[in-house]
Image (cartoon, rainbow, N blue to C red; front, side):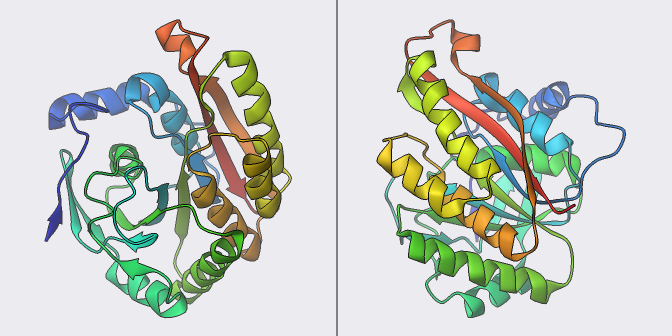
Length: 269
């Protein structure tokens, strides 16, 4: 069974050759020494808006063969915590789900449900894949889509995820897919987003969760980011660095209604 592209030719080129060219143009010159990351935050808008942030962030780290991708459920379909086990059919080639890792994860975290319907139209995971494919030829994924859940449930998933990673005994990256504030003025968006990013760099997943709620920050992927950060802490992370922050206004020219985009790299030093 395959999961077909939902946003090809809208968020990114649907033609393989054109997509490869676009991805390579967006990828900057890699740093002299790439980092070994436990987790990462990357945005998921159309490539014209956020592709450069995503590319810059992912190009700064080693991409292992297994990437757990956590994304928000924008459409409200399927189970609240939904795992896809289908092969992902993408323009640049099919991507297999890591069956060994998903088995361990499902055993460690019974609240995760295998559910293809939550993934059918969701773009937040899909737009990450061409960059990952370009950077890792032997890519396998563990795709999870999450609705809004309690922080207690976020912790439970993070604990199961950390346990599954330790059990796997091979490098695994946790990628949390999120945009920041939506349709606010640049001034308001940057202020609100800074509150959230400050909690992220302070290694405070519960504070991030609460700050987004208390300040009505329309950060769509706060659940994925909180889970990624909590799991990374359990795995020994002690550093979060913001790779870049920008907004859609720098492309559209409209600074009255922007969407914020941030990249972050989570490491253990």
